[in-house]
Image 1 (cartoon, rainbow, N blue to C red):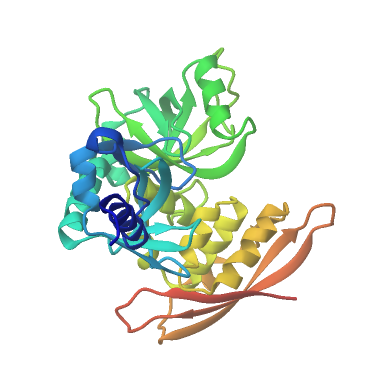
Image 2 (image 1 turned 180 degrees about the vertical axis):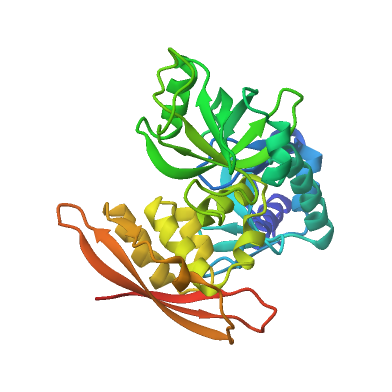
Length: 378
C-alpha cells in the first residue's frame, strides 16, 4: 500500500503536468501569488503604455480553465500585451484578435474561457479609451488649434512629451517647439537626428482633449519662435490633411493618425493593393518591424523573416516616387500582382535599383486585401 504522503506527491506531480504552469508546494497551504498585467501599446517595444494589474483572486479567475496549445504562428495580433507571473515563472503574451494569448517565445497559445475572454476584452476597451486619441478631421482640428495656440505632444512609442505652438499651415499644422528644452525632447523622439519619418502622436489641448495625429521630424521652412533651438517648423497631420505639394492626404501620415487612434487595423483593411504594397515599403523605410509583421500577416514565415533579416543587417529601403496617374485605384478582382520599383542599400554597398513583386489576394470583393508573398525582382 502506497503511503498517504507518497500518494499526495504523485497527485501534485500529475497536476503540474496537465495544468497551466508548474505546481509548487507551499508551507501552511498558503495560496501562491499570481499577477496578470494587462497593457495597451502600439507595438511590443513602445515605452508609452496604459496598464491594469490583476492579482491573486482576480488573476486566478482570469486564468481559470485556460488551456495551452502549440501554435506555429499567431492568428492575428492586437495591441494588448499580457504578462503573467505565476509560481515564480514570468510569461509574456500578446492578445490575438480572437482573445487568445500568443507566446511568441515558446510558440504556444493560451486559450481562455469565454467568460475570461469577455473580461479581458473589457479591460482592453477601458485601457484603449485612456491610451489613444480621437480621430477628428483637419477642418475641425484647424478650428480647435488656431494659429498661435499652444498644446502638448506625446509620442506614442517613446512616451516623451513636449510643448509646441501652431504657427501657420492651411492644409495641415505648421508647428514649432516652444523652448530649447522642448526641441531637445523632440529630437530625442527621433533618435537625436532630424528625420522625415512619420510618427504616431497624441496632440493634447489645454482642456485635455486628445487628438490622434502624425508628425515628421525635419525642420524646414519659416521660423517664428526665437531662441528655441529649432530652425524652421515641422508638420503635424490629422485625418484628411494634405501635404504642401499635394491635394491628396499622405498615405503614411494617415496610417500614423489611425495608429494614434488605435484603429490601425481598420485603416489597413481599407487599402487597395497598390496602397497596401506602398505601406509595406514605408514600413521598410521606417524600419518598423511590427508594422512589417502586421502588413504581412497573410504571408508565410519565410517571407516575413527575409525582410526582418534585411533590416537586422542594416539594409535601407525607399520607394521611387511615381506620378499620381499611375497610383489611381482601379477595379480589382480577387487576386492582384504588382511590381513596384524601390531603392535598396545594403550595408557597405552602393545603392541599387530593384523591384518588389507582390502577390495579393482577398476572399471576396467585400474582404480586405492581404499580401501573400513579396520577393525581390531584379
